[in-house]
Length: 276
Image (cartoon, rainbow, N blue to C red; front, side, top):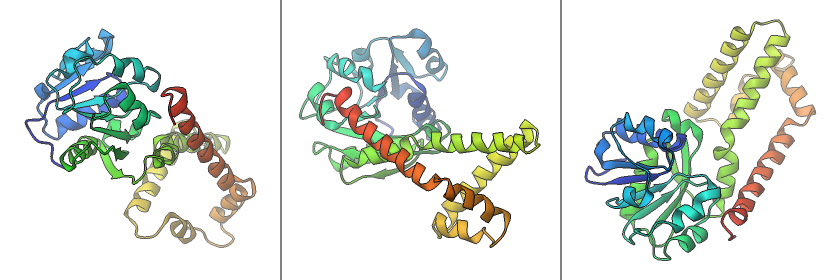
């Protein structure tokens, strides 16, 4: 999606996710001088100075001329950060990627009339391969919705959810999802080593297999279940491995894990936001 060339963007928080989005924006032709980043820690801003974007220690200075403000801070500090934005204006679009902080809290800490889009990206956004879900409050018009989506699209794929409550499930599936695959990769590498492979060989086999399987699933018209069946011969090695995974409750474990992540996301809205 296209980002207008006259839009000024301000990022509050200079962490990895802000860096991934900014790299994506620059790669998509956004002028570095139209991007500002604020963080109280000078060392966090060093990498952004090298990119040619504007850097600030003061959040209010960073947002002074911004059309869009991206809240990219840890949820624990979202309230004091937003409450300290004395110069926030009602026409400025707020895009929040603070995990677990819902729109009720975001409006309480800014302005009930503030246009806000809540987003849940994931860490592959650092490589331009992210998956982000978005939900906008009623104050956002279509232009602002399109603008928020364009910003997140610079770091990967995007989709809109129809209800804000779905953001907890999004967090469980895609927000936390990369870690689940990393755990599986880690276990497969360890198993390969236990079976006699050296670490480098086990890692290469595992990582390329994970990449190829994801690529096949993404490009195929068939769901993953059908693809699994297609590569599972009766009485073969794949069938033997999958039977053990099923017998030891891997599908049920994954279901329980995502339910726990969904519940924790809901808890965070109260713990860090003070609202449900």
